[in-house]
Length: 246
Ligand code: PGA
Image (cartoon, rainbow, N blue to C red; front, side, top):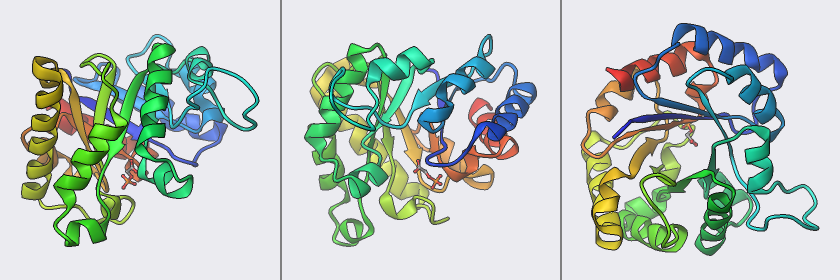
């Protein structure tokens, strides 16, 4: 299985930030893993142009479940693909919290993404209160059941485990805790999708940085990372790519 280093720029970056992409491409012309950057929608086309001819893939951070229509401010999966995206992040905890996205909507968005030929990076993860209450695995299993449609495959679907309390906080679970959740995700997917589940990439996300990437990547069933803050700087994201390629 090819590992995946995915960057989520969130609501950060204007055209000037493409200098970081150029620096990343210059420093890592032939990465030993798949590399994906998901900039704000306004930068997708420009980033795809910048990445043309390189191994870098570009993705969106969300899409609408419908293909077209009267949905002011929204963007369809086909529009992302048209702009040069090959992937889309769905069900990120910030979308679930800020926009009230529930599992069924995330699943509908995944169907839309597949309809447009995009790979869906579907996010799951518990809040701190849920972890403290011992509900982590129940929460993650329920999110997988509700957010990942039946048509998921190793080609069209990546799962990102992102504990909400670890995102942007500098805090991470212990390696044992990451191992426990990733093993549970693999087992849950295997029960549902059989042998296909062995090829689905499981990313860890939440305060991944150059200093902790290697130890996290050594954990079983961690097939890469979804990186927020540290994906904004070429040197940091490059170090994470190097750790995953090692
Ligand atoms: P972070 O964000 O790396 O800044 O913690 C991760 C994410 O939200 O995908």
